[in-house]
Image (cartoon, rainbow, N blue to C red):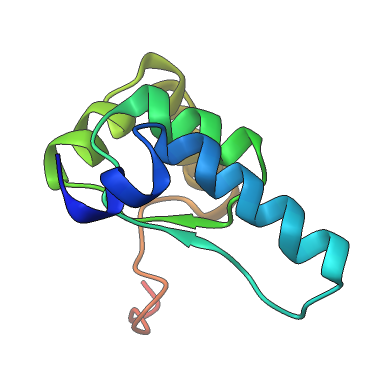
Amino acid sequence: MGPAQILLGQNGVARVIDLIKMVEVQGLPSKVIAASFHNVEQVHKLILAGVPAVTVPPAVAEVMMDHPGTVGAVDDFTEDWRKAYGGIRSLLRRQPNN
């Protein structure tokens, strides 16, 4: 158990949710960034609670991106893009007109 867990207790998700509520109650112009969470369930709970940003290890990000809902949404977006623009083009650099 690390020092933060000793001081705050084992439930980091609950502590972050408490912090969000405190920021809202005090009317502070702040945003909470949750860090060092290590599974999808924790991230899901934090996002539902209104956390705008969460840092996660690459393995957690990969699991989240590989979710069937994400894969389906990307596939739908790609198909809609092809219908609207005729192909995949980079939004970051200009493509020559064909």
